[in-house]
Length: 366
Image 1 (cartoon, one colour):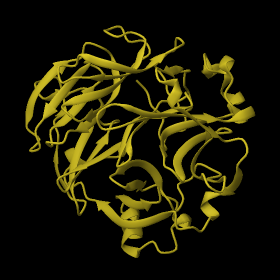
Image 2: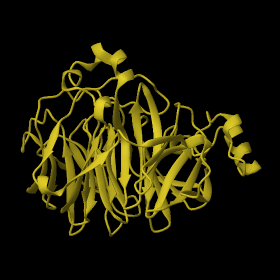
Image 3: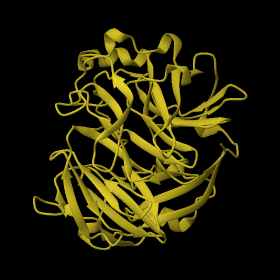
């Protein structure tokens, strides 16, 4: 499975279409009548940096190049680098203190980290896409056991009562074919279907990484190129389905298959990528908009959208996850020096010059 992140701008994807079983919960988000502003020029207090953390890997086996997903538990920060198949544990100062498993073919080892999640007891679960296995480790990073999945899953999230939310592949050859999002018990048996695939698709390429994003308001899920965002509670109940209406910039159905032959036409269209967080007053997310990846903040009260105008990593960094009520952004070593925030501390500039990764935790308005 191949993903495109903020370092690689090779754009290829295939259409994924799905429908909810609970259409009465749908909420439309109109995008075609918003007043647009440049996010990089805007001066507002919607995003407030609370703290910066410089990551110090120490040894080579704990070095990461990409920050694909972040979770925290018991004053520890867990970051997955899917490209190198590493799950590294950091303390709150940014010092690497261990790894959860490692790449290999033996017990407790994995070939390809597709996703990870932590339950309320601190047990860490890793999804290995290549072996279709779910590996479990305790909070000391000791391997507990592994189970073969009875279906083909792409991402997952631990929820309450030792249950899981899974997103399945469109070409799932195991149990529950055509299901997109399901809730299972601890024995990996399906309890209910949240959404199903409607059309056939090819899962070899995606426009961006995607998955479940846990916040204090619930668990958000979105998979490009579908323009729905699903909101679940911690028990796996569907709270809402948000449909983003891009008007005349909506990707036509005819362009949602064999898209490699139609990439140039995407300069005329807009779709959601990465993750989208939807609150009562504001929406935070990322778009593939007219051929470019753009982060955005949408003010639902004033109908204004603050949107990046290019793919450079500006003073807000690259948003890649959440921790509680914080939006987490990464400033990689390739961060453009002329885009430093005016209050960016000198020690952080030095860290980036030394090719270290800097995280920023933003307090966001709901």
